Length: 540
Length: 65
Ligand SMILES: Cc1cc2nc3c(=O)[nH]c(=O)nc-3n(C[C@H](O)[C@H](O)[C@H](O)COP(=O)(O)OP(=O)(O)OC[C@H]3O[C@@H](n4cnc5c(N)ncnc54)[C@H](O)[C@@H]3O)c2cc1C
Image (cartoon, rainbow over all chains, first blue to last red; front, side, top):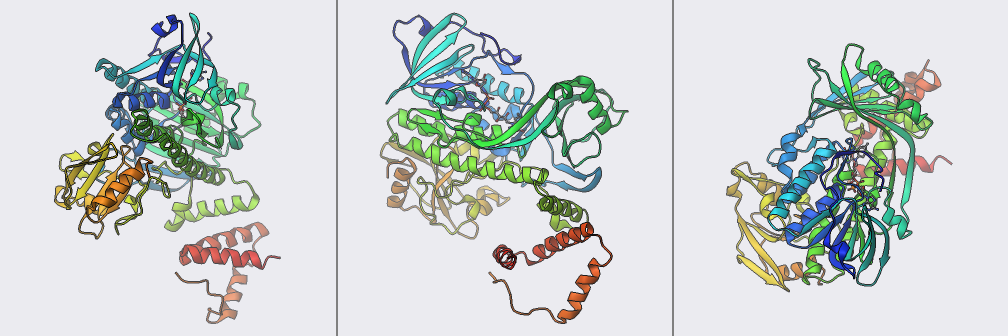
């Protein structure tokens, strides 16, 4: 079995499993195809719930080279639910300052001025191998505590046979093939998903006719560069429609040149040619070592449906977006966040199988939002017509002197959590509260003295009461809901009030295990909340 | 929400029209296009109302034929 890419870290070397020595295929509740960030996150979610999960990957660890570098707040909050968020932030670079250039002139700079009162920053820059590494470390920790997680390296899925209530898998290993069965198979096998091909499923959307040359460089000692994001439209240095410069940990900088469609990839990838571009861009006096480089193209595509019977798709396998806005891994993590608890409940017999269909509807909604945003960024960065270029250039020109034009400058809108408006799991909004916490929204964090709100809302259904009475727990149709009783007085900064009550004196929220709001009302009404619980678990 | 005002609304409309022409005087086609584009963006921001802007876009598209 040949590796398709070089490994940075051989964190799950091949080991023979007992399943390979059985006469009949062993059946597992959940098999995950692919041990990238999305597959490993799935294992953490299910493993923490005590749901047995087996991850099969055709390699033995983390791929070399950082693809993703920018991880958003919601992604980190999800990682925190899995116990892997803190090391990411400790290692990551937090930045707030950005500069925008047009044809080498700075047109303006901005400070993101992140909202206060959140445990996690708006985003961090971190090399993807670290991101993956921290999740695998966490998986090892959970395993040591007895969580039913298995990660099998060099286990390649070559064929699948989808039955009504399970899937039969042909797995290839260095010791030869074996068969496995899965009640549910989750395809986290990346953008070129072999699983999609095996099932002959469409992946439709737009391919953008552009390529990008990425160079990760390490500045030699003494080279000072600010922790800012610099984005050039039509730089005159080197060719290309845009260039992005962004800091990563370990004194590494990401330089991303947009170099057009008709390029000689082999020629462009030669170190001397990459250096020529870099030198023209950074100036001759800047000294650096090359860490990693790659040329990539992108597409904005998604599958028509993320569920096909007992086969589910998540992450890049289900949808792919342009890199503008850092929505790839970030949205993959939100897929897992959404799927994990639903699958757990269905497997534990607490919810009907139809709950899984809402994974499809909610995350298709999320994927469409991401595709829309990243397409818009792409259209701004590479205008398609004479008039769209004229308007784009006019926006850039005006933004130098007029503040109003700056928000129109679109060099990537950073990923924010998707609100599941219109989801069948939501109950009608009955609180005249802030729009940002309407049913379907991901709960915004808020400080509670030395602590934060979100960790208290993780992994279970919660009844959040703010200056309102309610029983300490309710059980409805087998679903246990525990109360978290707060008062606006618990947060002197008033963020809790601003984010959850607005002008209302009190509020009661039903919050899903993925920290999304299912229902809210001014006070506890038992019948209404019981109905909301049934609804949020697909039982109504 | 205010509807797009399509009734006469500019005092001294002849003055305004002359000023608009004067702004374009001596400009190349390319420079004029740029001026128009900037003007559209500035005016759109001033109006601000999303619905009104949509009505304006629709109205402008209508007279194109
Ligand atoms: C240049 C670039 C920059 C990016 N920047 C960002 C960013 O800043 N922020 C962001 O959020 N995202 C970013 N992304 C996207 C991000 O890298 C991906 O979204 C993310 O890696 C997807 O994770 P995944 O687990 O779905 O798939 P992958 O990481 O592709 O993992 C798929 C896994 O499945 C395995 N596999 C494949 N076939 C089989 C098989 N037959 N059997 C078993 N295993 C198999 C593969 O070996 C691999 O380990 C960027 C991407 C690129 C290319």
